[in-house]
Length: 116
Image (cartoon, rainbow, N blue to C red; front, side):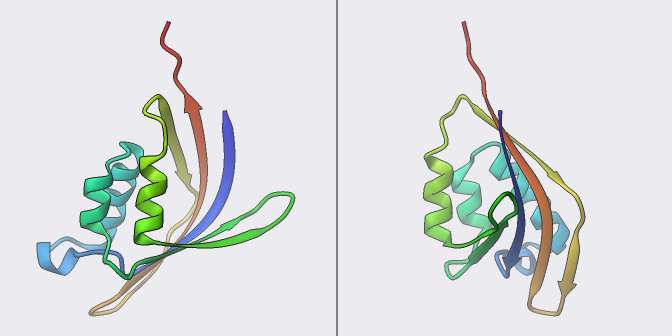
């Protein structure tokens, strides 16, 4: 099992005003799509100019930034037999009329499922 801790900030990645969803509904949909490794749903949930910023906290702190396409390609490269688990330790939200920004300290773990 691999474990990584990230603090992720999602900036305006949703189409929630169009579908009358709340921003928290979109965050939940995002993690459901991530857990199911559904690149089509992730593509629908993310704006073209989305930026995903992650801070990995471990022996060394590493800050990374990904575009929508880079993120979706990364999800596509996850083997089907790999299961993703995440634990969101807290949610901080700044929600304005046309922008929702979430900071989600999250612990991700992945496990490869072997079928014998």
